[in-house]
Image (cartoon, rainbow, N blue to C red):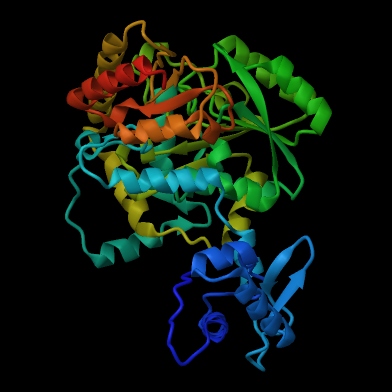
Length: 473
């Protein structure tokens, strides 16, 4: 709000201030219910004596334009404008209820910084363009897409569902039946549909701590209570999970056990089996997000997904966004038919239509005879970048070395992680996500090493070492 008052010799200053306030109400700059600065602060902002402001407020109150409440201050009257005979929506209350929190403001700040040249973007959660596999597309025309749309039902484009089933069979050596596969517009839509269709406001969901799920506003919007379960080197701690189940009547367990986001941790086979047994005991379904499962650095070390170990009690989410880029927005859900029916009905009710275009393009990519070779090349390139980073970082920092995926979880040597430290990272040109975004108080940052070439990695390590020397990290 601008408090520069137009001053004239013919008009007393208090009248000019009254005019300024009423004009800003009429123009919508001041909204019903909006609180005004204190009389002392307002006098300082305008550059007048406090007695002048007292007179202004007295006149505005007598006209019903403002309300003064002891202990609450002075605010624009939300019962009566005093200037308009028409009823006015209480926009201020609506806007105030949707104000971004500190986390959202930080994310906005980082995104704005990412547009500047010279920054080290270890923040963005997708591949850089130079690593996205290049697939040749066959010549097609508009009628081809119209014809392809005939092969789409409530679960999505059938040829793509078949291609995804084949991909999983080839990479994991287990079958996702086509009739139990539903295409979604990315992995996040899959999570959104599960929240909308299977949960009610107030339901409790157990997730890892830290977890990228904390950064998704859809849980808060739906009134879902998230309970973080600590992790160790083998993944989610089951003793802590059982405590949460008993304490909060957990309805779902949601996690990504392979190359977990943000820590890069992979849950051990023994822990996976024990998790399944625990959830079977309490009859709690598991939602497995396998966004990075197709990106192991050594395919011989691949562990079976939870879905493979317990097909009936698992909802499995996959995505192509981490492999062929987020532009296509293709994900999938594998679940029992009755669950898929409920999810597809929810999608129709919410009018979340699924375009045929990205589905056909994704099917072209999966059907390319060079697909497996190009994905193998992608794995090798990401693995090389990870190795180079760990060669340079040495023993100066504590960070888990992932066996696949994009991320490194780098722990700081400081006791806390403050905004001053984050500002120092941004000032140094390092774009990363702090631990508190992921619901964790441990001082740490997430780095997307897959996005960085060798020069960027070298600059990143040098800057991290400089910040460590001055006590920032």
